[in-house]
Structure formats: C-alpha cells, structure tokens
Image (spheres, rainbow, N blue to C red):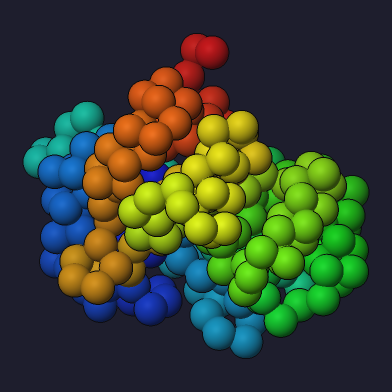
Length: 238
C-alpha cells in the first residue's frame, strides 16, 4: 500500500519527538504492508512551518538509517499545507513542499472556512500550476448537507484524500454510504494514514483496506489504497 499523508519526521511538528520514534512508526507501517510513504509535516505559519531544508534533512536521515532494515520501503517527502494567502508564495519559493516533488499539493482546509474562500484558494493554486489534494476530506463533513462542498472541490480539479482511521466499519448511514460509494466511483482518490505516532494515530491501513475491498471489491480498493498514489508520484508504469 502507499501512504501519501504521514507525520513521521521527528522534531518538525506534532509527530514523533525523536528519531527512535520515527523508526518505530516506520516499522509499524512496514509490518502493516505499506511500502511507499510520503512524510508530510504540517506547514502552517500560525502552527508549524519548519524550514524545507530541515524537513529534507530529516527525511534523508530517516531514509539512510531505514535502508538497512527496510530495503524495499520508498520514503518520499512533502508537506501538509494549510490553505491560505501564504501558500502559493511558499510553494513557489520552495519553503513548502509538494508531494514527492510533483505538482500535487497536500492541502488542508479548515471546516470553518467558507466554501467561497476554499474555491478561491483552489483557483489560486491551480493558476500557479499546482494540483490540490484535499487532506482528510471527511473532516469537512459535519453532516450530509456538507457533501456539496467536496463535490465543488472535486469539480474545481482537486483530488480527495480520506483518512484510513475514518473509513467506517460498514456502508450504512449517510456517512458510510458516502465513504464507500465515493471510493467506488473515484470521487475519493486516496486513502492514507495521517499518522502521528504508534499509539493513538498509527500508520496502518490494512484493516481499512480489507473492509473496503469487502464492500467495493479488491480492484477498486487497490486503486485508492495504492495505485492512484503510485501514478500520482510517478512510481507506476501505468
């Protein structure tokens, strides 16, 4: 499986405190079947905004140490970028990182942000040549009445990322129906961990994959848990 949203780098945001914890997270991810992982520390001037040089250095260190124990693990780097007026400029100067050096940007919207402002932020990013991937898109849904917000973002050219721990146990109820039908029809492009540690927010996807495959089929589940991400990151021949 491929995880495009993971807070695995130490000392740059609210993820692991040190390198040992990062390595523990990597072990959990590997044992769960994840073979490609994008480290995505927060980038938000009002919260965490680590220098890109530091993020890249931390990623190199983790990659070098992990190579011996996890030789077939691919570790890439990016940021989870808070949407706002600062973002396009931060991306342009390299202080905020795209996903694996592509033009795709893991973009976080607050559920309190008006849809009109979201739309304008997307327009600004796409005007600059970036393609937003909406982080943990399910958090924008306070009720079924908010589903049109995600439809609007998708129609604006955004891709949607669903957190693995938010994939429901069944497809019943409005949220379960939305989650599984959106993965089945391609509205949701990616499922990722958004992991921060090895306790409350683990880098695991297998259980969610198995539930999803049981409901929408193995082939469609594999697209949102692996293939779409590989294609976006240029790791697939497809």
